Length: 373
Picture 1 (cartoon, rainbow, N blue to C red):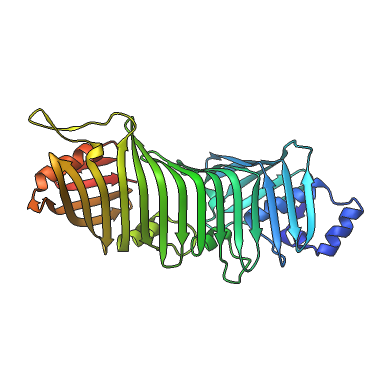
Picture 2 (cartoon, rainbow, N blue to C red):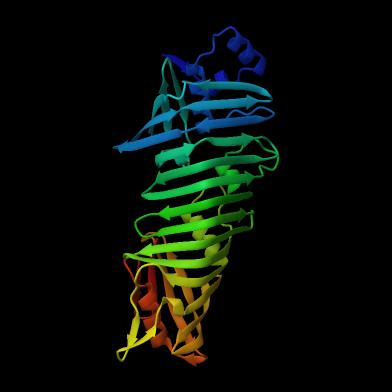
């Protein structure tokens, strides 16, 4: 087996074109270049990569991650010089393994080895599917577009339809695209969904705007599913302080949101039957009675304002402290004050919240709400 490194794929454009004309370059060499584009990209003045039907499937065997790679079409534009590889619509295949951050790949006649950083997303990747994905790299912009995306990692699956992203590398084309986009990026999707053991959220017209200071989200027709009940929220807007400094880390993200964030939900309705709060055998409130919910967080203190119908429309105000327990993967909200129509009503407020919130991932004990992440 021939050992190939990133330097081998950094051959000048002139040499690549010459090799292609002499028919020395094969689809196997293209396979190596594609794999290198995933684990440690080599950049020219302008690089455009188009990958069709890319699939990565991995499984864990002890401390080793084993993976398979396939795609049907691959195009690269190195400063206007285009290189293409396909197999008449049939998949091109490869395999790789990751152990102690060491990446080893086999692609036909060659092998490739490199060492990954401890936070490289390839290490925890379970599966990935991209369809007709196009990724563009240069010093002024990193952008990507795909009709469909599905990624699974750490028991969490994220999927999107008609996903587009545009990110600003601030003049450095060699920076990893995920790090760039989590600092300066705009994302849009016709539909996006997040599913794990505790959350199932489907959003439409999803938009995210990211700067070094703020992460902002805007979405419509949001469906929250839990315990067989589907709740539709017509509008969702949220913004948090951006606590992420490199690659995505849930603790950094939550830390930023607990420093300062604003969340607004408007237009509640039920798709499937949900429980209703009863008081002396009379219906007190149901989901349609919630007109809106707004939450402000500042330095781990939260303030919730809502307008609900409890026999008649009244304002609901709740305040308290919020704490992240990373070891238990829990958010802890301790309610200190609660008012309905300006009247202290902590017990009644907790009863209403328990009706709408309590499920497998959200538990209310006394005056404290526990949310599993």
